[in-house]
Image (cartoon, rainbow, N blue to C red; front, side, top):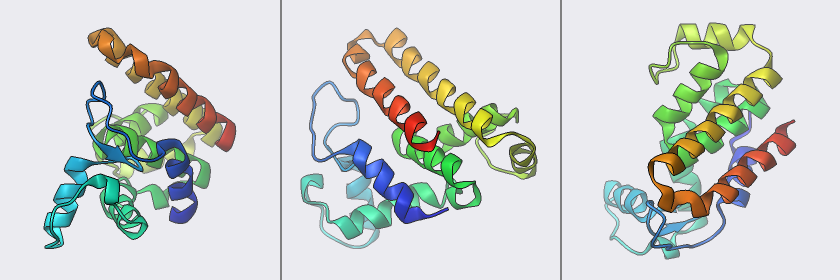
Length: 169
């Protein structure tokens, strides 16, 4: 599974700089929030600056070290790896792993272990992808149900899932 291909796929969906007051993530650029960017810059002894000014090399480094590697995307078949990476970026690594586990019928403890990998190998990749993406759609619906102010984002979230299905299907 290629990190570069998955990164390109995510960046197409994430777009550029936005700072929508209704978005709980706050200021975001290329899918990276100000909070994540601040933490990354601090950990590299760099001064804090606006996420609007994030450099492409920083974007790649953050995605590789904080999402791709922890979510173990490189251990997955390519199409599933893209879906999983996109979820790690959009929902966080632990929740993405839980989506994967539920899609293959594993217990959803948020840690990819032997059981998850065994069930992953035993399942059909297309069926796993569809189950995974269905779980994501359910999650988005739950967000809106719990917080109706988020309804303005549901079309975009559904489009994200639809475009992923088309790309990896």
